[in-house]
Amino acid sequence: MLGLGVWEVPVNSMFFKGTAKITVRDNNGEYEFKFEVPGFNVPEMEISNLKINGNTLSADATCDMLKGKMLHTDVTFSETTCTGILKGPMGVKIKLNGKKIG
Image 1: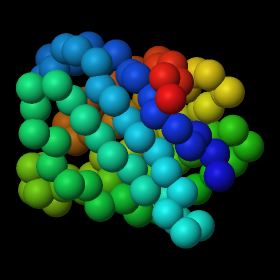
Image 2: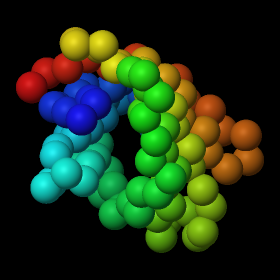
Image 3: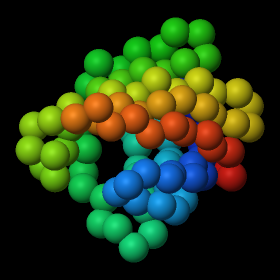
Image 4: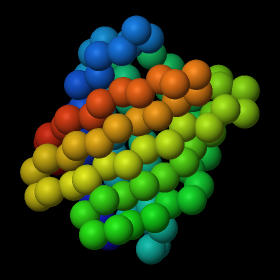
């Protein structure tokens, strides 16, 4: 499975500036994601349309906080880094440039 581990991802957007921690686990052959942002109660997300193409993982997500709006991400993983983009509603785009910490 691609991207397993704990990733530290700096975020600089108009909604949040800080570092997010994303844990990617193998749960009996299915991906399991845990999102943590200091000082912010991250809502539970429903992940769908998960696809892997080479070293890139793509997925869509929804959560109650966004009232049915879709998020989409494409993240490319190396052994120790990840880069990509998170696209949200109303043209929001957040660049991702993280490193593996565990």
